[in-house]
Image 1 (cartoon, rainbow, N blue to C red):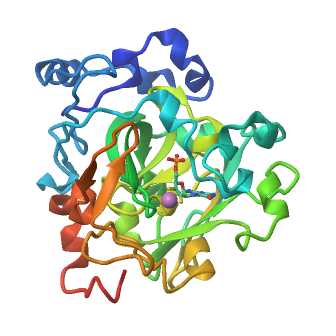
Image 2 (image 1 turned 135 degrees about the vertical axis):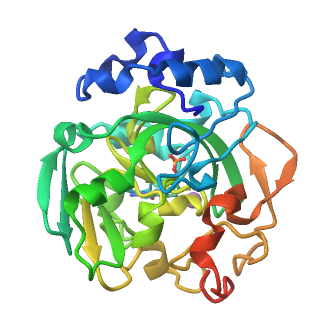
Length: 324
Ligand SMILES: Nc1nc2c(c(=O)[nH]1)N[C@H]1C(S)=C(S)[C@@H](COP(=O)(O)O)O[C@H]1N2
Ligand SMILES: [Mo]
């Protein structure tokens, strides 16, 4: 496996705040993984990177190759990732979420997360307890915003499937709904009706259980900053960026398709699935190309953002124009 751990490439001093709430075992690199990473030329964050995700051998839990992906893209700089953001709770401009004037009142700790709905073991967890049973791993994912820009982000995170399994889903559960904190005192953007707050997102249960789907707590081995969704956000690399809901306080299993913030706001423009698809235009612009932040040229957008080998089977037989 080519999963890198924070400890493989960052000095311990830079991950101190992550360690505050994580079991130290999560940071002990496994010798095999480090060896493979070295063999693949993975070094400092500025190097060309190849990254496999999934089980130890780069395979999904069912033994298939679907937990695996390889990319050879330069990660976007930490500076760009943390200053070019969409997070309407802190303002609608790209620079608003990293402006301290907008995040000053936000308190990402202490934090708690409720897991509820159609589960055998509903619970509200302190963030530390919520994360502890899982192993944090680095996943370098291409991310694609519906607006036409993209980034490559070294997420620190763990499979959402861990959380769902622990909650013991009932047979009737078919979807997962996620909700962002609602507190206009902490999130000044919520004082304006730009969206129907709180921000909500949803996945089908099989999408949520997919090994590529993670909950992230950090970037480049450092704890998430407010603009990226501190202290916990969703990452689904084959879907447009808005599915990656930030600052999550509730995860609820349901039998009906959840409402989602952007689908509510403009149902003809943002569907429930929101799979990256160069062949289905946004009603107001093409999705065929994208500009990687930090580059000038445009590159072609890939179906499922390039993760089709792993995820296309989830949509077998579905009309992706209707289910956009
Ligand atoms: N709660 C919440 N989550 C959100 C958003 C938001 O406005 N509020 N914006 C989404 C959009 S449109 C994108 S492109 C990604 C951006 O994530 P990043 O800023 O970490 O790159 O966050 C998504 N998650
Ligand atoms: Mo977006």
